Image (cartoon, rainbow, N blue to C red; front, side, top):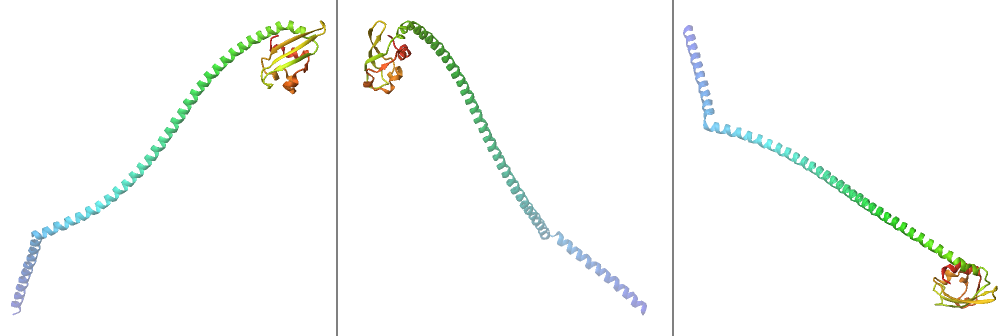
Length: 231
């Protein structure tokens, strides 16, 4: 009896094991069918695509941030470049302005040198002309020395008439006489001042036109001023 029960139990165990294997195989087959079903594959692909899309979105966000950073750096570099370009332009303008000023200075220097050369040449010409005039004046004084020698022995000269515009700075017509004691004679004279009466006879500065008539002036005064007019 016991042997039979053991055999039946063993058989039951084998059957149960087989059933377990069958159930396991069925379960695996079901899982396999599920895995191989289009719906499952679609969902799996959809999930994969979704994950990839999320990764791409995240990557896109990162790239956008990188692009924004690059744009900001590029704008900053462009701004720095523009500032440097502006400085270079200002420096070029300053350099060009200095170059123009230097050119103008050189030009004015040449003009000044030419002007100085011209003035020196003109001055030399005037010096030569004045030297000739001085020589001519000296010759005239030498020629007058004989006539002036006569006046050295004169007594006072008397002016009898001084006519003009009433201004010492104008030209005047002067008449008078010279008394020569050696010959006991009065020699009249008339002349027109070639320059102002004040310059010709400084002694008359304090006199008026009316008061000058009859004013006595020494022969020395005449000698000192006679070279300004012709006897």
